Amino acid sequence: MDTLTVVGCQFGDEGKGKVIDYLSKKYDITVRFNGGENAGHTVVIGGSTLKYHLVPAGFLQTHVSVIANGVVINLKRLVEEIDLLTKFRKDFDLKISNIAHIVTDLHFARDAFLEKLRGAEQIGTTLKGIGPAYESKFGRYGIRMIDFNDEKKVREKLQFMGKIYQLPVENEQADSLFSYYNKVSKYVTDTSSYLRSSLDDGRSALFETANGTFIDIEFGTYPFVTSSHTTTLGVTEGTGLSPKYFSKFMGVAKAYTTRVGEGQFPTEILGKEGDKLRLFGKEFGTTTGRPRRVGYLDIPMLRRAVKLNSLDFVALTKADILGQLDNIMVGVSYEENGTEFDEFDPNSKVDRVNYESFPSWKDNRRNLEKYTEFIEDELKVPVVLIGTGEERNQMEVRGDWST
Image 1: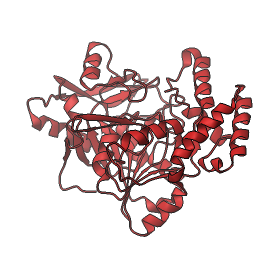
Image 2: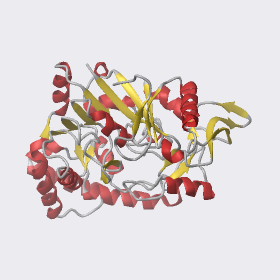
Image 3: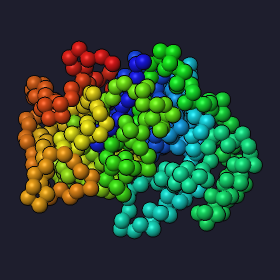
Image 4: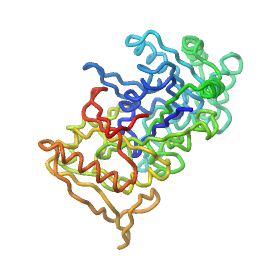
């Protein structure tokens, strides 16, 4: 069977949407398996910029798009996205897991309450209700898509959730949920069974994660993380497929590093140089609009991502943006208490980052190739795609690689 799982190697916002959109035309099925509308995909087509959050990034080119069971769904947002994307594609086939959990207004309120309660220790959450939605899922009081077959059950669950959060629940909240659900109900199905039978029949599939490796709930910079499994380790749980169905793994890394929210960021660039890179790269969150923190490429971080995700390939994005700087630095190792180490540990403190310098490639394309070869030598994994612009077709394939 032909499958490829694509994950982010950093803190999210690596350009996975562009890579997945580019790759998806080669696959029969594209599958989103984690997160919610806290993630954002940006695809540029003929000068038109599309930004969406729940529908798989391969929606515009693949034959079938699947929102799997690991995703938490804001029904209102989903309806809006489908309405938007159908302006660009009419003949789509969308399938939504019947056991995916939904995000309610109560989750939004809970998210804002918890973030305010943290005070100076705020995480920097997107306030999209994602954490509370997973909280209710694992607390066994969440609402699943399949529950809408029983109106009484949904209303009772909302009331119970309101008691837990100590928030009032009006009938209109349930009415609104049913209104949006009815607009997408025709897409709801047992996606695990669909995927299993499709792959057994020889169809190909592209699996896409939301967010990045180092905001994974288990392996990220806890507590400054998201609430889902963002690595290749999450694809089995998020789809209901056993490990035997997953054959190849690709990591997407921005040519530099960015982060939204609080938490570790060893190679962060502050001051005017950081402002310049942020401006060049239009580094403002797709979901929040907040300015992203920016920094140099972090080899120890990528090294950890390669090992944790068992990556076979790496795609490098926004090389054109980084190339606008006159002098380019790359973090190659850390120091802590006088000891040098070369792999990122989300639970350790970095006292110092050691850098190597590279010349810009804005006037010499060969310098980008040297930069890429250095990354490959350090990671022991081939860089097979390089993003050289924001348009979907501005992607270079290196060597004779193909999916």
